[in-house]
Image 1 (cartoon, rainbow, N blue to C red):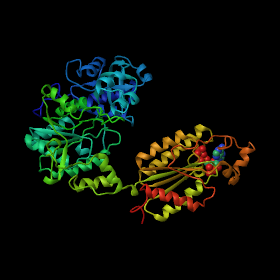
Image 2: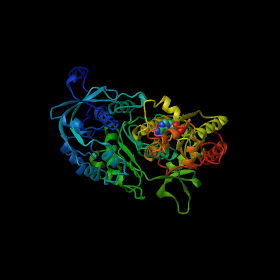
Image 3: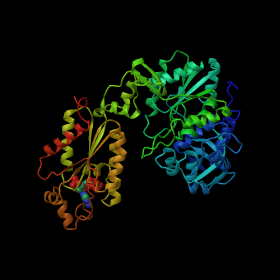
Image 4: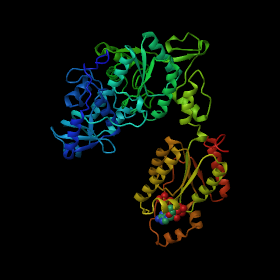
Length: 575
Ligand code: PPS
């Protein structure tokens, strides 16, 4: 064994078969039923195949699953804290039996492994949440995943792998357990302390990891999760560039960066145990566990799901058995008077300690404000600024909704000209008529078709917004629920402003720019909004504009002022 640390269970369970075995499975696979793995299952499969989840040799069967849920033990008695299961829908489950060989495929259809099915059962997923996460509250991301995103049947059995899931990014940084173990041996690293993270690292993290390594006379493995983390986290591409930058702030040859394709569950204490097992399998001797390790934070009433040091306490109970040492750390805060970081419990009475939360950092980035040097390193801040430009350089969508002839298109056109005059970002107009011609020519005006039309507009606008452009949408969009869907699609990717063009029906009908009201009244056009079809007034509009007595320029000036107030346009956004 190329490292002094034995894997969990004694041996690294690498499940990739040799070339002959793989060729044989491929030849037989024509007759195997197939399952296309979900992103979470793909992450789990990778750690199963690489031995990161040793001693597991497949997706859990029922006795293992129940033992893990209830007592954190596999049927063999080995410690295992969180179920690793393959969930499938009923129609797939019904086609499987003990003895079936199921081909597991990635999203392109490539067969990565086969599962020799041993058991298929319907779990009690609420009980699983209660046991594993100590909660059934859907605000817990782990609970939300199990209750809303897993399929109702689980399939257990032994795996044979053909190949690991393929990655095209940061290839040289993705070291499997055996590869990391070999590196440690080659470098003579006998003591390795692992640092688990799903966030960018700043000075506090550099200080605590450096301290931990120095005190233990160990080397440091920065081992960030790049599989699935908490929704809303900084994307892993940005984070990895930040880790690469921070790695230069340690003494030479004392630190290594490797990426872990884990799907986190945000399971707090139990997840800390899983992290320890995984690091042991990767040849590490120690794991740093900080405040609220792998915690999901608080629920909507402000109550934390776990105590701040609950993860440390649970791991403490099991570290002897695991043979991996925990390095507990308090939260680090900055003491200006000493120009140093200290544990939150070491702050002298009366001294002012400083810290910035992730939310505060995001806010500063969005406002284009300074990030203090005590908080982070310039190269890290630079990377974050590239990904999170200030609001005035992010993309946004202005979504006009209103009755036919209410003035949506006119306002959108004038606004487009004003924004083009300012310059700085590309502007795309998705006018109702234009979309119906180019994107939705086959659609009619039933509720179903209108909703499809609006979803398409929302999708295009969200892509434009994500890529830092400005999208101006001007459909009727008569239904509230699909407008909300569109807002939810776009808002996380930049800005979203809903404008209700609230010109009264009588005025719209009098204008009747296209003569369609007259046709609707005469029954020539059916399902006409405002006449024979509903228009649900928005309850969540950011602005309402009645164009009856206002010139388009006046209306658009109001909108521009609103966009300025919200920070979407302003200094730095134009020429
Ligand atoms: S929706 O409901 O948002 O999908 O409608 P939208 O795509 O914006 O409609 C674009 C234009 O189609 C004309 N039109 C109708 N509108 C409403 N109901 C019916 N039945 C209908 N038939 C044709 C109408 O002129 C819309 O343009 P605007 O600019 O709103 O007048």
